[in-house]
Image (cartoon, rainbow, N blue to C red; front, side, top):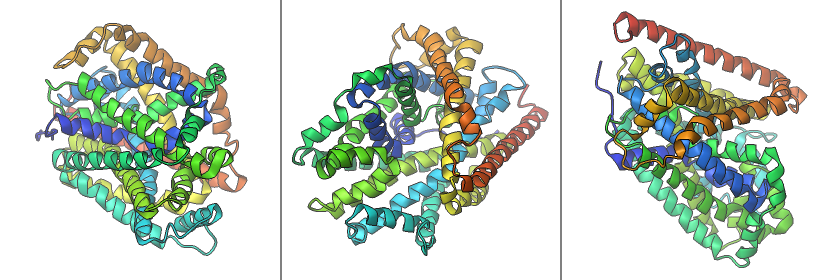
Length: 505
């Protein structure tokens, strides 16, 4: 077996994991969730979810990934098999390849919009649009959804974005992903600080902060708010995807996972709560008033980023510069996340089929480029929403539940606790042991069960989907099932191939 890649140093792995976590959700999804779910009161279930769900899952995934990497495995099916030698468990691990691959298929296209908008901010074309209707028209025309528009410009930026992603994947773990994150993360945090400082010096900004953070404690009785908080923690920390398992598999046996995992989580929280919570909604309040800020919060993350923020930048001095910083920040956050989404598939092909990494990246690049065409050309038919739900929401909670149960109940809490602390630079407080064993899995079962009870049947029956879009949604679901089956077959082939070679007993 060829020697597996490793991270260059501790800072590299921390920034890489933080880069995977820091994405569009920190700056767009988080403020929307806070504004829609009680403002400051939302932070109570949010931080409880962070402490009881997010941090334990970070430690769990770092420890599982490092453990699996010692046996030459960087993908979930084979890593989970090291926890439980059962013929079925490798197929449960398929979710850890399937989920990030599905997210990558549509995320890369959305990421490319940010590069396009940065270009239009630089040329002045973007801020020449001065009305909400005009900015919405600009976005739909760019997406090819407006009457008479085409996708040529958007497709060009997609090709560039896709190529940049695979350039860093091709360069490897230390020479590509780590180097990217070491440069991109400090830049995006610096850009975020510059924009946040500018927003916080706007007149009447305290009223804007009050609009977002004034607590409505009555919402704490709503299970929906607690589910939203737990979902945001999953989304923002990139836990339950399979990415951290793969990243941690490139660690050495004695490398720390406790302090490193906590540092990566803390970096993400700074980007989300401090920066993400200080920019979009408060700025919308200052320039658009209560009604405008409320409408912006209700309009969703896409409209906030691509419609509301350009309009705001158009009303401040040096607006084009701040618009360029904004979209550059989001693009950097996007690309550090998207390379991580492709890495589990790269690790699977490379590790389990014995392919040279560069050959694995090139072959996967062709396959993923083809799959990316579906969200590009069927954006208006609900394909992206469908991919986002199954890949970016449902699979996260499901896989997080599976790996937690396997680690703390099948592998065993005593062995798990010892594995987490091997080479640790900090001792986890003892009260976290029962939390990891009981509270975290129960929390996950609650979130998953509550979804099935409240939303499972309506989602399956496509309630709320436009009638014209239902054939496309159904086709997307059939395509997702086919993708899952193909990955499962490849896992089976790889399994018996390695067994024949005596590499698995």
